Image (cartoon, rainbow, N blue to C red; front, top):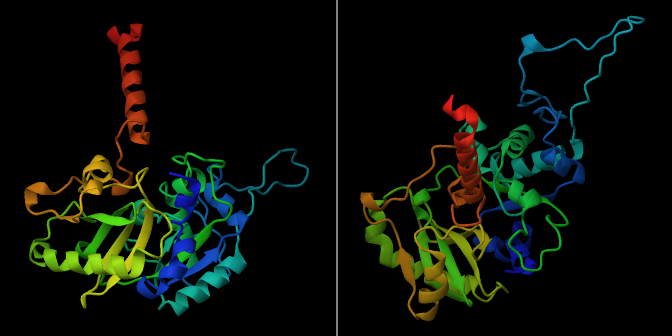
Length: 335
């Protein structure tokens, strides 16, 4: 994988080509000051000061009873550090407010590649639905998933020259409350050929998919040939698609081939070897309750459950095991 292939999967790169067959989206380039706000782990968890008090969330998560008084009487001799002013991004907020209104009043946010799925728990709705700038900032600031975009976007690239893209973008995508998770699928393209399709939500068995499987396969194959194959310059990639009630296919996202992208009901070995050498397209769904994949009960999204050798989880487990063995060998362990 090279940097150019990863860059093509940024939403500001692919969305203009697929605007007519995707979810309505408005994209804003983020100022570097806001990017630094997202990256700053040393500041208290503070939300930006809103230029409008309407629907604004509290500026900082704190306990009012524990708030310290930083006022120092003249000549007291006591030294106290004044708290830094809360962040403020009035120009960005006004642009986002206008965009939210034009998209029907509710959106879900996404950076260049990733959405803050892991921080949905912190919102009042329990999902990514946002109606204000403060709600967006809360989800972005609380998300660990976005660290990929901010710091590790090119970790798997053979020609890596930097850890982050030149610019960051915030995509505001129209919120559709009626979207059904059983109608979202991940499509795998190898050597510009559609070789596999997987049910996107693999933690649930949807009986209706069994009846629709053949028809869904035809819809996605036709959509790929007519709308995707000739518009993407990369030879290997994946894309997520959604099928509406009236059987229209919509592009939801593009992802690099391999790396941190999950193969879901496939394995990368299958996709890279066996299926790529065959002429038929394989479509996999969860066909009974016993075949569902385990989900996560934590805030970590399923796409980040990668325990393969060399992955972050693999290294974490190795470190934990080494620490356990070290403690077991220590003299205090037998005390």
